[in-house]
Length: 351
Image (cartoon, rainbow, N blue to C red; front, side):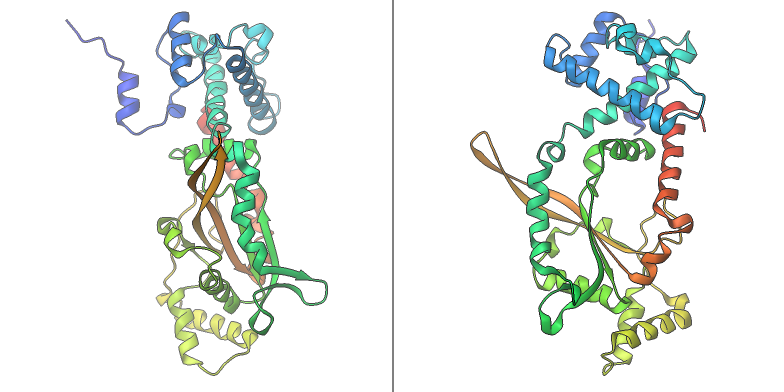
C-alpha cells in the first residue's frame, strides 16, 4: 500500500522554504481548518481570539489594497468582507481548493499577510515598545546635547564631536514591518533587528570613526553585545583610514583629515577593505556604517522583573554621503518601491 503522506508539508519543512512561498494548502475539511487555526495559536471558540483574527484579516486586506495591488486590481469581496466570508476558517478552505485557482490565489495572499501581521503584533516589542525604547535610548540622550548656538554635540566640551544630525529612527509601522517580512524569503519577525535605532550624521569622515570610538569608550553601548555578523561598512575602508592617520600623526584639522582620506581612497581603492552585507533592495550607491547592538532590557511582568536582550541599530555616515542618499536610486522611497515589488511577487505570484 502506498504511503499517504503530504508531499507539500514534508518538502516545505525540509527544504527550508517558508509557508509564505506555498501557493496553496493541502485539501482540508472544516474541522481540519479549525484544528489548523487552534494549533497556530488561536481558539475560534474564544471571543477575544476571534476578534483578534478578524482584526488581523482587516489589516491584511487594507495592506494589500493600499500597498500591493495595482490600479484596477480588486480582492474578491467574498474574501475581503467578513460578512460575506462568514467564518474565518473559510479562508483556509478556499486556499486549499486547487480547483478554483483564482480564489485560491487571493485567499493565500490574504493568509500570507495575516501570518506576517500575527507574528509582528505578538512579540515583546509590540507589547512593550515604550519601555524598551526608553531604556535603550537613555544612554544616547545622556551624551548628545542640542544647543541653539553650538548645534548638536556629543561628549564633553573639550573634546566634543559636533554632529550635523542625530536621529532616532521612528518605530516601523506595522505595515512597514509586514512588507519587510514578506519581501525577504528568509525573514521572520524575530529577525527584524532595526525596529529601533539611531543615526549619527557627522561633519566629516574622521568624525564617523570618532563617534564609534566614543560610543564604546564611554560605555554608551557594550562591545560584547555587538552582533558581529550584522556589521556593515560600505562607507570608508578601515585599513585605509588607519593608514592615513598613521601617515599624518600631527594633523588635527578634521577638514584636512577628511580631504586626506578621500585622496587615499582615490589612490588606493584597489586595496580598500570594506565589510558589505548585501541587501537586495539597497542601491550599491548607498554608503553607510551600521552595526546591531543588544541591550539588556528589564520589565516588570506579573509582579516579577524579567530580563531579555533586545537588538537595536546604530547607523553612521558623514554629511556629504547623507545628502547624496536623499536622491537617486539610493533614496529611501526607491528602496521602498523595490521592496514592495518583491512583496507583490511573493504574495500574489505576479509582478
